[in-house]
Image (cartoon, rainbow, N blue to C red; front, side, top):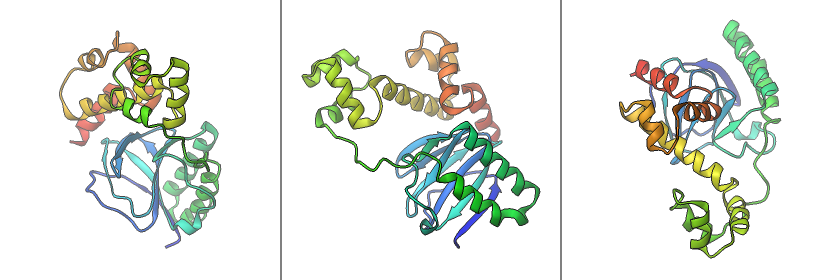
Length: 236
């Protein structure tokens, strides 16, 4: 196998690994994915990259429909995207959707579509060549990410501006961005693992109103909390 591409619908996971790179382009719905313990949600405008040999599992929504590219690492020019889930520029996303439509209409065009998808993949932001700067004080602060930024800065013995700079150098995100990602990951856990009302989840996570929670959730995952939960229930 050098490169194979097709449209797939998954009903469940089961932890496993491949000897090739797998790239998931969600055409519809959403999928919660766990790759080597790193969890995220792949949805509209977000592709997932599963490197060869990496154990992974997933939970798809009922309506999840993906374009899946299985490819030997030697066929990919340059570096893979930096994260297991990577935001894709709207122009590129339209290209990937057109490729998916072509395959759905005529599977015989899959070989040409795979080459075009590989070309588009080269335009996705690559892995940074330099390793991130790691500061042990920041790593220790990550375990207390619910604490205020001012409190974390004091705990590490740093001024707030210095703490912000070191935090971003270590994690690639500001403290606010990191906290938001953590909160939304916890929201996904609650939405998929409990029957708790969405309003209760929002208030428990510290949001003052449900509308702001819904807006931030959709900005990250491409679907609202209620849409994500409803899709998961249909799948169950």
